[in-house]
Length: 370
Image 1 (spheres, rainbow, N blue to C red):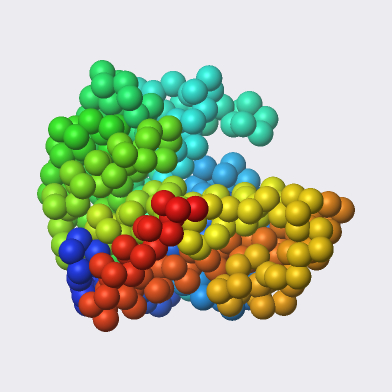
Image 2 (image 1 turned 180 degrees about the horizontal axis):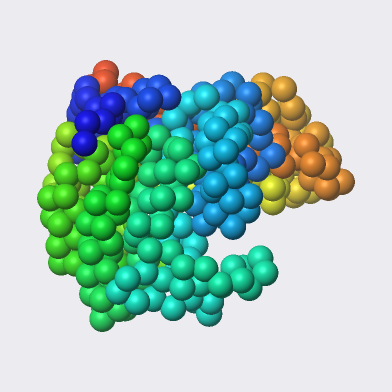
């Protein structure tokens, strides 16, 4: 299948990489952080605000959009880009993580998974072919294979799930009909190095235009996450982007880039923003509702150039949080997203300038001291 997707590796320091991944809706300069728009909206943020903060990739959720408003309706509306008025590249996951998180509402077999909607209890079934069909209706630039995301510490279950994930990856590839979407494979295997290595080698051999690392940030330790990344990094092809699914704090981005990751996404920045919390780029986070900020004149982060930090004091933000004004969630989410988007851009610049090792050492020391 001929595709418009190409990954160009432009710089490297150690395992850290800077590249460009071309898509029909524009180029992604990596490393890159993608805000999550679960239901075709990044919560509390407009597409114009995403553009202003420098976002280049937005993620949407297959499971939720399948249930409502329905992928066929989205297709009739011209696909996700037109439906939500986001002009840049988009990524949809396969819905696998959401389905498998419904532990009391789903049944897995070799062919697919039956599940009950969390909305109304109605019965549904995802197969690899159905997951691809839904994502083709949604129309994102990057789509994902259907995988099984098991509890990371159960060896026996991870072995069974890995066999299904690999078989489903082959079926997803065979089911794809659109050549304007990049289908990414997903490496699974829990916290077990030999299973991760087996999965990375299998997925790499299928020659997808990009590869994801799933099943992390689901309860394992940071040390285990880093060990998994160190196992899969040399086994995944250099000429394809690597996407670490569902991971997103300043510390996680730095450690991921150090271990060869190119693309990140996470709901955490906007979830924290809706719950009165703000990232600090150099480590830790603030609870803006704390009484100590009642008369604080400074912004969240004096070094941050986001709209929130250029405009508002901690005292004002605390007032919004105390009074439960909707604007609080918007302003804190703007700051949190900008922090990660700009960090990814700065890491890219440091790699291209040959200064990433110094940049990373400085930031890592700050994170450890926070």
